[in-house]
Length: 282
Length: 138
Image (cartoon, rainbow over all chains, first blue to last red; front, side):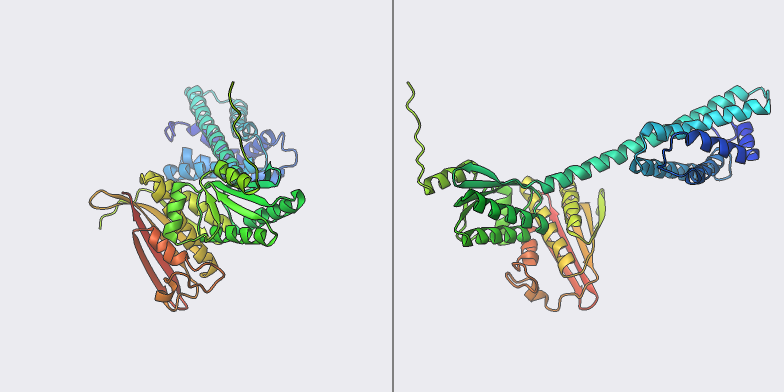
């Protein structure tokens, strides 16, 4: 904190002596737009804790430790607010409202101490810093939420696309776990039936790592497709994954594997008797 | 050994979601250790295998992932998987390709050993298992 302890003695004294009045007013200002997301009692409890820590941080024997605690408490409060769907402005406004409370207390006390303006400025600065801290924490919390969701989305997307009459493909992206492989397997087998396809490509270009469990799931899917009379080709095994699979000792046996989805399509087109002819230019 | 621990992650292993989290953490640390794409993939896969073992056989546990710097200045990543499960009665058998008590391929433990540079397995029947693996940046 840039302000020195002891600099704001008058304000600290005021807040201490008229603590209940200050807390009531702060709760009233900060809770103007709670819209039922938080009860007034809860808010008052939170602000009470914050005020105690703040007074200790401003003017106490353990100012340093209290300041750390205050920062932690504010961050925690900001994280909670983010989850309770408060906007960062509302959260920060709750903290800034303390300034209003102090101005009112000072005006009411009718004090005309010589250094009062400086004290008020310093106090205002302190509150600003705390308010901005809640903003920072809020942003960090939201980013965490976004990255978590992005990850989940990546794990959930399992479309089966038709490449050609009788040929379907499953482009796998992200991580394959048991639950998701189960979905892939079911969707693929169902699509084979629905479209009357005899050939399928499982493309793993987007899969970051293939461990034994993923390999086992893939093989089970391919075996199940075979039982239904369909032929499966794996494509998109990247160099680093190929090397890892060899080191692991995974063998795909007689399963056909192609470097790219294009190669796999070409192979399956040939298998299904389609001949690709390039038209003469001219 | 005077290893400098720059990055450390401690992750609880209980569900499949934790495996995703571990893979991400391992990838980050391996990137920080400037590992090649192949070595990164190998390390991530080894982490995946060992974490699955902790869930499947050890009933859950923890992993500690840390970046190492050897006295000669070589970068590396160490992972310590610990569980308080039933332990492994016959380590030699468990490290044999194709041997599995579960439903797997039986390649997890021996495969993971081939994916890393140093592999250490401590186990006490009825108390738990600790697998420590290290991979150095080439």
